[in-house]
Image (cartoon, rainbow, N blue to C red; front, side):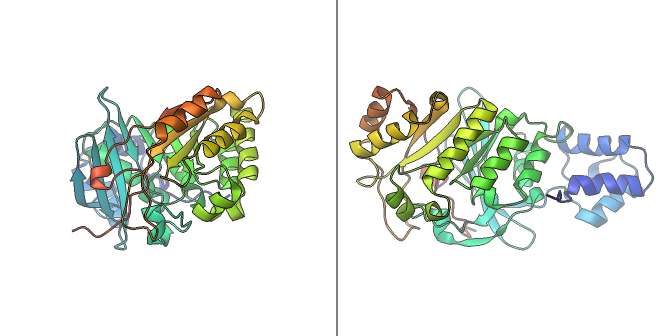
Length: 344
């Protein structure tokens, strides 16, 4: 697949077109990622001709996304970003007591997959983000002196439905740019098999999370229409191949919906699904997620009270499982709540 020309490729090309030495590009990226300078005019180490050329190409700011609304809670910060065409997306920063900071970023304006319980899915699909728009969400946090400990593609949209995702991963893991190790990046998917397969080949050390939410095909299709296109059995085969090829754990996300997918039968079926995988089955890990209520979905769901019993059933079956700690639900910044309302 042809690589999209990102702004960092263009910056390098501008340096070359002006017949400047290669170290000028290194000075430019150093100004962005180490000195955290967001305006080309302020990069005084660069020649005036280069600063002018960069401003003519990109405008004066390095980042293409603009923060227009911020909501804070004790450990979460939700940002509404405006893009250059006026569309809006949301991203979330999470702070942990150990000093670790994690960032949840978006890959699409909205989402076209329509999972019944998801606020973002109910908003519909607007468009894919460019690789620059994806990574510029992280630039905002970098320029505001956050520590980029880890990043997850769990914001708005299905990451594997956006062809520019892989260019974004290249930017994030480029040691001259963001410099993140692959193991500090997590991709979440509803089960887009070609994307899983490409990740396995190109970025085997990137963490992979799969949204399961029901072990029963018919119910999963009702909750998540994507199951009709990529059936659970076929997705699990792709995940098996990923584990066999990479030797890495796969995380299974399971949102607990009261009276819907939280019965003992569901727990036993989830256990059976994973126990039947093969000798690598121990590399599957279940994250049980308390449901975050939202008034944006057509059907109103409630969080399950049976999460501990569900967890216990899985543990007794020998399944690796944890109950995920939730941050940000009070500001609609938790899993499945991002909606891109114009809150200003």
